[in-house]
Amino acid sequence: MITAIRLEFLKLRTTRMWLGLLALGGGLTVLVAVTESARAGTGGIVPSLATAAGQQDILTTTGFGLLAAMIFGTTVVTSEFRHKTITDTYLDQPDRARVLAAKVITAGLTGALFGLLAATITTSAATGFTAAKGYHLAYSAATVARYGAGAAAGAALLAAAGAGLGALLRSQLVTAIAVFAWAFAVEQLLGAVTKPLAPYLPVVAASTMAGADDRATMPPMPSGITTLPLPGAAALLVGLAVVLAAAAAVTTMRHDIT
Image (cartoon, rainbow, N blue to C red):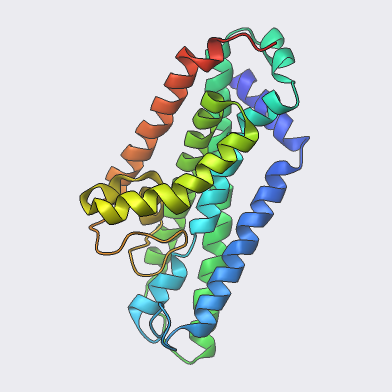
């Protein structure tokens, strides 16, 4: 397994797509964090940075980083089907379940970087704008670090789930569309119609791991919900990644790839 994981990391180092997705997630996070920080307290959705609520909203606006991590996870698998290198991978490592497990682990470990980058950006924006306006930071370093760790863990688990989804669907375009449709349409609809279900939706759960609530998140979080505690949200996402990978292992991963 260690060899298989090393090979997956080698593949990542020789490609640029993951760097592009990392830059995309970081760039969107900068845009949201800076815009919301500049407009905080002016009648928008973010309260004044003089309040703990306003500072929390900026500190936890890591949603685009989390979503980029999930998209990245799908590409760890789907890019091989797109470029038809999966045949060589299976010839080199005939145990397809091991290959899939290595991809899921690699996606998760690398996906944490997306969350860390997003958290670094939001922390910089929150502390910078708060200090510039002469306000006192309401949160301790431990709380800020907890939000950052939650963002990293949430991104890692979404990336792992994305790898399982990519193995299940195979098509890079179809999988990317499915992720965006789920995050921006399906979760919004389900959360609005059935609020008790909302905390158990994957993107919502990952966002709550990063400290977000229902005030100001992107992708938007259904309002008026009671979020899961950190261990519960993490367990949910671990279960999702395992279920998707297992489903792929017993279905599409067994099919002829020629």
